[in-house]
Image (cartoon, rainbow, N blue to C red; front, top):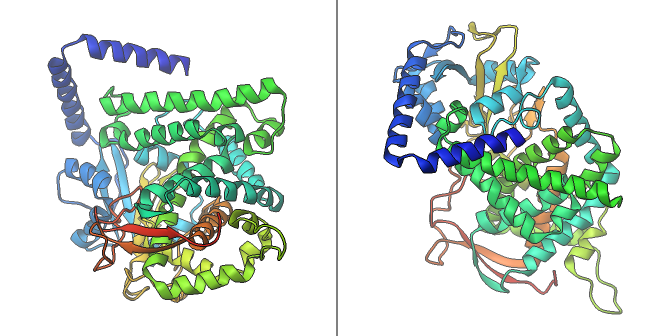
Length: 504
């Protein structure tokens, strides 16, 4: 990281000392020359799949700005279940249909890390921390994530997550209007910090707010140029590097403080230290999982609470279910607060005795998780519908191919938790991944969703309104082109709320 800091300081000084106009002109000229070279001489392996007819520059913009529309239009334009396109020197093959997803989710040669790093690029490439992860290091991350989700670990997390929910929700006004994609995400980010990093960080509200802002910079700095040309010192990339450097410093400072204090705490950082993991493994684990966990769980939690608010019948059912498992306050003495009562519910009950909440989460993942799985084929060549997907090519599979498929889910945009999974087709539901590409952190994510939703549903009465304060008509829909939060159209979705008689 010292080398990165040196390069950043040099880049920043150079940027400020040179003429801004000349600098930008040279930058864009160089970029266009490089783009022309890359388009003229693609180095990625060719696939036998049909190619999109438009100019490659159009592919880049659409893939990173309107991915849902772009991929679905590719299948329509080519008329094929497999098509290919270029992102600079990278050949990308898009798959659809039962054959495509069967090949994708059964494959052991599709590498998630390489696909994420090259095509998504949310965190800058930091050797040894966020990139160049050997299979042994990745296996170690999976092993530690599995340890974090053992019964004992999750049981100990429950009261801490609920206390975080209580503290943040108590800071809200007793009544008002909120944007769930801001307020609920705040809760999710805090509980993700609690679950996946250090109690010292999670207990410091200002530090959590700082991390949230830094990860926001990483999101806003993820542009086509910063992803596909990470070596180009563009303003977006410099912003991302500075944000990454600061996140790195926060995490390493927490590690140093813990080691120097000699005080053991019951958290993920202590688990990693006690396991004897090296410094880079710990930093990589925390930095990578924080962004992955908070994003996906934040999107799901925001939409889960929104959908429940817009469907009174399901809200009645889930509140009745929660009241059935919620211990009563003692008849004598002061009433216990909601978070304390929820914390006494055993892990087994949360996982096996909430079928209504399970169905609500399941349907929310289907309707409002705009995921496109991205992998790199590390070999050998794959064959899908008699089309070769060569070694070295990148492969993408959009979950909308299943979840918004009217042949598999009639009226697919309709939120209907009573609907059944399409069991006639292979991999008919992909909410937590499938096959060899399953979500490694789903147990923790599911538990966190249940705890956050329970605190909100029992602690607040609310309804969904638009910017005028009236029930929205039509009900807001998730925007699958918004690959981070799936937010609805601006101004269409707020929660008008007031506290219940249950003290948080």
